Image (cartoon, helix red, strand yellow):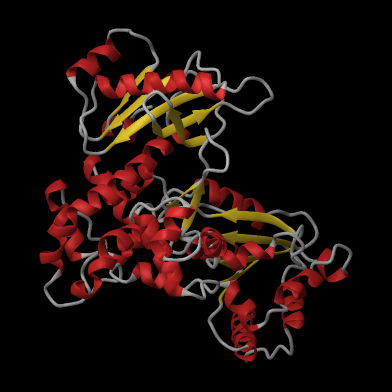
Length: 492
C-alpha cells in the first residue's frame, strides 16, 4: 500500500494499517480503529480500501432490518452482483465477509460500527463467533475485517474486560489529534504566536480546516477577525460543533448535566469538589459523569505527580473548552444576526485566561514529552509527565507546577527530571526562577526524589527579563531552560 499523496502526516497509522491489510498469514483477522470524531479515520480507511480493492461500508443510523439491508446493497455493489443481497442475519453477512478473503488478503471496513451495535446489540457476539479460532470459515479466509467508530464509549467496550471481542483483535489503532507542531504545519501558519492561538481554538483536529472552508488567519492581525467569521459565525459549521459532539455520543444521556460539568472544568473548576460545587450536585454524584466524559474523550484525568489521589480534570478537545468558556455564556446573543463582531472583544479576556493560558501549559507539557532534546532534559529516559503540587509550609501555600517530568519508576530512588512554569501573558524573571529553585528543594525533602540533575523550565509566550536571560546564559548551570514560542515550535 502506497501512502496517498494527499494524506497529511499519519505515517505511523498508515504503516500499521498497511501491515494489517497486507498480512499474508492464513486466517481471517480482526482490527479495531478508534479515535475522537473529525480526526480522519474514515479518510485513512477509505484510502486503504481503495488501495487494496477492499470493501468499505459506512453504517448509518437505522433499524436492525434497514442496517442489514444497506450492508447487503453495499456488499452486492462491491462484488458486482446484479441485485442487492438479502442477508437473513448478521451471522450470514459476516460469513459472506469471510468468504471474500478465500483467495488473497482482502480488506473489509465497517465504519461507524456503533450505529450497527445500537440497532443490533448482538453483533459483537456474532463477530466473536465468526472469528472462532478453529472455525473453518475463519481459518480458510484471509479477510482483514476492520471495525471503526468514533463513539469511544461504545468502541471501548468492544475489547474491554469480558466483552465478546476481547482478545480477538490483531490491530487496535487509535487515530489521535495532530500535536501542536503538526497542527501548525497542517494549517500552513508561519507565525508561532498565531499558531498557538489557533491551537487554543481548534486544536489538532484536521476536519476543522474543512469546516472553515480552508479559511485560516492571514496573519496575527487577522486572528480576531478569523474567530468572528468562522467559530463565532452562526452560519459556520464550527459554531455548533461543540454541541454536536456532545449530542453524537450515545452514552451521554443527561446532556444538561454533562454540559454543565464541561463548562465547570472549562472555567477553572478542575477538582471533583470544585466541579460539584459549580454544578450543584453532591460530589459522589459526579463519579459516573466524569468517567463517561473521560471515556468519550471529552475530559482527561490528570493525576498530580507529587500527591496521590489528587487528580484534576482537563478538557481534552480545545474547541470544547473554547465553546464552554467563551461561547456558552453568550450563545443566545451570538445566535442573533450581527452580534459576533460586537461580542468577541468582551470575551477576549476570558479566552486569554481560561482557554489560551491552560492550552499553552498543555503545549509545554507536550513539548517536554515529544520534542525536548535529551541534552535539554539531561536524559532520554522519561517516565510520567504532567503537573504537580507541593505544599510550602513556611509560606502556608501550595506551589503549583505547570510542568513536571519524572524518570521511570524502576525501583530505585526516582529522579525528578524537570519542573517548570508556563505563562502565556507574563514576562518571566528571576522571581520565577527562584520559585522553581525553592520548589525543587521542597520536593527533595517532602517527596524524597533525586533532584541532582533536575532542570528548571521556564516557558513564556511573552518573553524573559534581561536578568533571567543573563542567569541562563552565565553558565549558572545547564539546569535553567528558557522556552519561548520559537523554541517550542522549532527547537528542542
